[in-house]
Image (tube, rainbow, N blue to C red; front, side):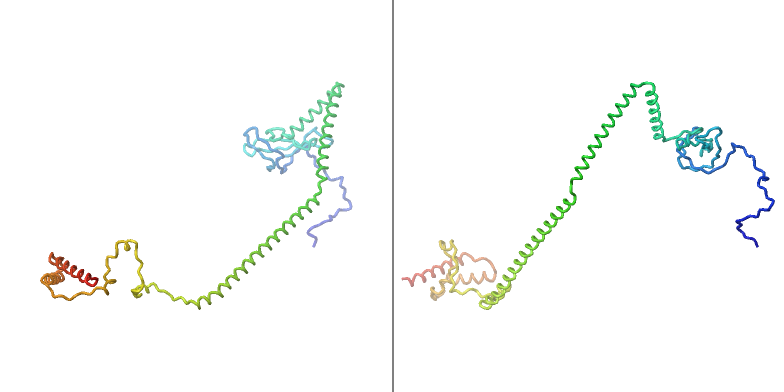
Length: 319
């Protein structure tokens, strides 16, 4: 079996390549190629924008009678994506670019226009210098002034660089590190002092608490304090008569209203037979006690009579 991928073909001994017929193709023949739009363009018929990089199936042909330094120039035919109008552009090997030829306008070519303007001005200047020697001198003086200005600017920049170069960054960093270390040392010292002060305060408080705890049991043993309940006030005995009661200022001048318990031991009451007034008084008292009404006039007279007897009895011992 023969190989599937053949590298060497068989040539018979009587093979003559000159006898092979050649195809006679036209020089302006066209090829279908796949390409991308080399620049942004706008269709003239419908106004559709075609951005750079859009892919087209284009037809390529060689431009007749146009050559740049032996390099052929090619023309490309594409169609608008909206109206299918034909758009053509050519290669420009002189400027390493493409030139718009028909069917659309190129957009965003400000840089190219600027370069073209500079070239035009350069050509005009050269033409003027060829015919006018005074213009040559003027241009030379202008160029010399521009060169002087550029040199001055360069000198200023060099001076600025030298000033910056004189700065010792290592010394600055070293100084900054020393400053940071000193700050850290001061902070550590302050922290240590604060810790010592706090420890001293804590020790003093402990000593005070210990001294207070030692004194409290001695005081409690010497004078034990009984617990007082709020209900003990109701169970307390009345004060003895031997204690002197505090006298108010109005009692000193006027006297107490009720002095019976103080003079009870000094007064002696005589036993007398009840008279008619006393009998009526006792009867009236019994009636008022049963009925709950106020005493009558007779009762008042009997009470006055009793007061008179009490006063007589009080006067008799003094006599």
